Image (cartoon, rainbow, N blue to C red):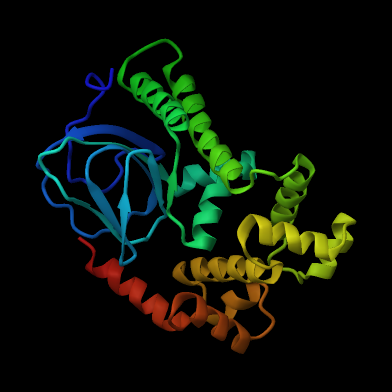
Length: 294
C-alpha cells in the first residue's frame, strides 16, 4: 500500500491547493533542501531514516515515531545523515485559512498549534501502536485523494478533519494524562472566552467571576495545561493579534489599542521581549523579507 501511494519527491515548498496537501515519500540520495519557511502548517511524521531537523536555528535529532509541527513563518530544514538509507516520511500541509475554519467548529482542533506556539516545543513522540494508528489514518486519506470514488470530496474532508482532531487528542492526552473531563471543559471554555474578549479588559478576578470558580483554580488549570499564567497567556494572544494587525498595515499606534493594551510603553516592552525587536523593526524586517522573497 505504501509503495502504491508514494509520491516522487519535489523540492517545491509551497502549496498548490488552497486548503491542504499530504504526501508519502520514500527516497534515497535527495537534493539538498535549504533553510526555508512556509505560510502554512506542516505536520511531519518520520517513518524511517537517519535524519535531524533544524528549527529556528536549533538542531533536533529525530527518530521513527516522531511527529513534528512546524508553524507558519518558522525557519527549518531537514538534514539527512545517511543518504543511502531509505528516508520515509509523511508530510501534511494545512493552510492557515483552513485551520481557522476548523477552529470555528471547535477550539479542540487548535490545541497542538497553541501548545507549540507557547512552549516552543515542536517534536512529539508516539509509541508503536499510536504511530501505526496515525499512519493508517494518513494512508487512508492519501488513498482517498488519489483515486476517484463516489463521495470523494466529502470523504476527504472527513478524513482530514479526523486526522487533525486525532493528532490534537493524542497530544492532549500525552500532556494531560490525569486531567478530569470537567477540568478540560473549564479550561477550553476559558480559552474561548479570552480569545473572544481580547479587546476588552481581562483579569484573573474577572474570569473567576465569569465562570464561578476561584481564581486559584483557573491559575492552576493554565499552569497545568500550558505552563503559563493567565496573564502571560492573555499577553501572548494580544501580542500575536497586534503583530498580525501591524503586518496588515494597521498603524502601530492604532493596533496596540485595538488589541487590549492600555498604553504604548507597556505594549512596546512586551512586544520587544516576545519578538526580540520593536514593532517598527519587526514590520520593516517582514516587508524586506516579502520584497526579497523569490
